[in-house]
Length: 509
Image 1: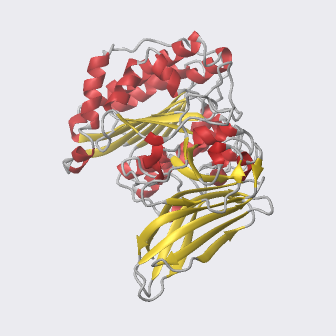
Image 2: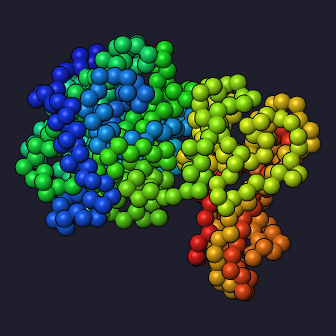
Image 3: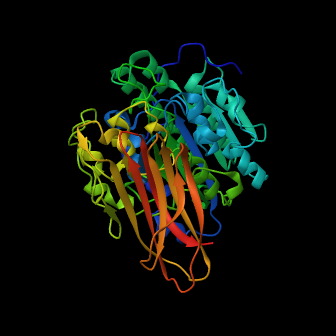
């Protein structure tokens, strides 16, 4: 069906009306009591997934809006603010954004760079409903969208039902179709896309009352869809994972596609039996939606798929994320909002930073290895590819010679990040894994060194050319008799570029 060209219909009130209290209570039932409820889930409860996409929605404005149903879902489950890429990886447009959410991989894999989908690699990285159909053909899958390219192009023909809502019906038609499917059918996995928030953002800007009105209207439609889930005759025997997300944000003046943090904003609101009510996390990324849906449906995530997402139901502890509560506001930086807490030089327990050879002066925030967040680091200087640091999550470590050198300094940048001692078995092999992102300019160098039982560090990897954001795997030959291994990440250079490290682990081969 054609892409919408007509004006959107005005937001409608939910029918039937749901009070905030009734939705909160019923959503809490859907969410269960958190992780313990998931363990105790009856074997005969059927897993079901509902993903609702709110095009162009900002979490900050949802909090400002009259949006009782979304806020009830937040209170009943998980809220996870997040951020995405910018050019040159991909602009903050709907094509790349929804492709990332639906396929579970970043734009450097699915290759969608715009809204034309030219060069898309959906055969290699299909949508999550197609993966579900492939793994479990008996599942009933359904996708309905107000923006036709999603259901015409991104979701494949393997999906049982794909509906591109006629332009004249817009979000009203999308909502009514989703409600009817939940009422009259027995879907196992659904994707629903609503578009009017994005329309209001383009026309009036995210700071406008009209944008808040559009959020209110979408909230009412979310309420209708969730009510249809809860009204199902088999609801008590079903285990629903409900996820609400967005593809990008909007500027206050209106529009998106650029690299401002507001355009790069997204979020996940989720309720489910494994998610604690009222929880907030900062380690969730856009590709996690697809991975979470598949995991909830009982479909093992095959490493050969190359997914970038990981299930939100299965959080992965990370040492650096424990620093979030101790992050400080800016000192020398001027482009970062004064109230934003986002850096520290104090490492987490077991870690250390060796600055014995580090030069003097420079920008305080980046003198030696720092621990920071995407929101803080990317605003230090936009459009220098920091926005492409897509695979680090939450708090990560960065050595940034470029930003350090923005104030007078002496000597060179020479700082080493040192890990805790990890247990290893002598005479065998171990695997070092970490997420990295390295932008190079000579004479800069990044070096990874490993020492055993306090011995002399040995180089296992050197960086002297650009490396895109990725997870590195290094097989270690553990010396006979060794019981522990420690990793060092040494960055040397001057007024050059940067190196990001996150998710460091040593495990068995």
